[in-house]
Length: 81
Image (cartoon, rainbow, N blue to C red):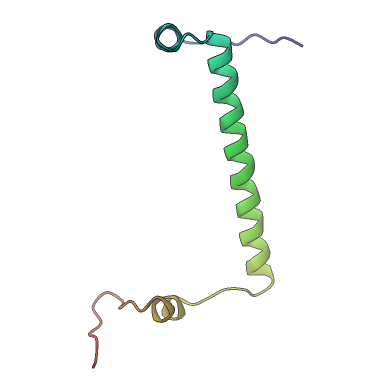
């Protein structure tokens, strides 16, 4: 299956420059760029879903718990000996 997209001239010129410098076809560059972006977006959605599942299951920490666990001080707090 083949589809067509319209690119602004500025993007097309950039694509041609990259294509010439890498000896890859513009189609190959576009295909890789789209594949990489889709994989990232799919991963991001999985991470969001996992985070929402954690919240729903009550697997959450307060800000104070996080700071304590990491051994950090909250802004404006003074560390005691």
